[in-house]
Structure formats: structure tokens, C-alpha cells
Image (cartoon, rainbow, N blue to C red; front, side):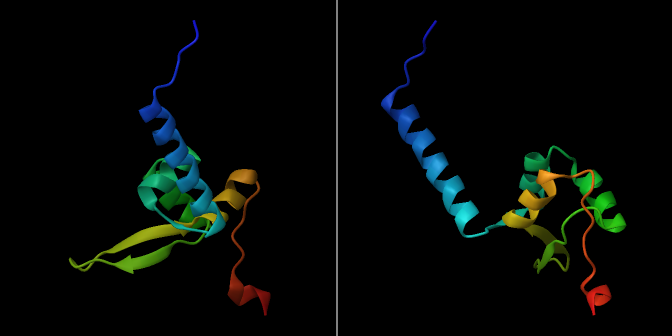
Length: 96
């Protein structure tokens, strides 16, 4: 059975593709919950990998309540997704 897309569905799909392409080209920051969905991990699994240096370094943004939100650059996530089993975050202090 062939499903015909409505004009609304076509516009929605196009908008989603344009948004995704812009996010990739601009190396957008991705919040933790979206990073978890994209990578197929839970936030807890990401936290555990962060502690072991097996996930890209997050950028921290302070919240009004005194906590911080973690976000990741999309290019860093893509690099991790290319080969998550051998990814090791480089420590810039050890490069000098």
C-alpha cells in the first residue's frame, strides 16, 4: 500500500530536513536529552562515559537555580557516533 503525503506532511518534513542541515553546518549545541536520543544512550550512561573520558566534553551553561545544563557540539557527537567503541576524549593538558 502506497501512502500519499499531504502538503502539511511535506512541509513538516522539509522544515525538519532544513533544520537538521543548518544544525550540522553551524555545529549547533545539543542539550543532554537530545544528545542521549541521538546517541541511543540514557543520560546516566552519558554521565558514566563522561567520567571515564569516553564521551565528548560537554559545555556547561548556568541555570537560575544554581545548577548547570550540559550541551554538546553536534560535530563532537558525530565524531563519537562514527566509532563509539574506540572513542577516547583527548585531554588538552596531556597534549603539551
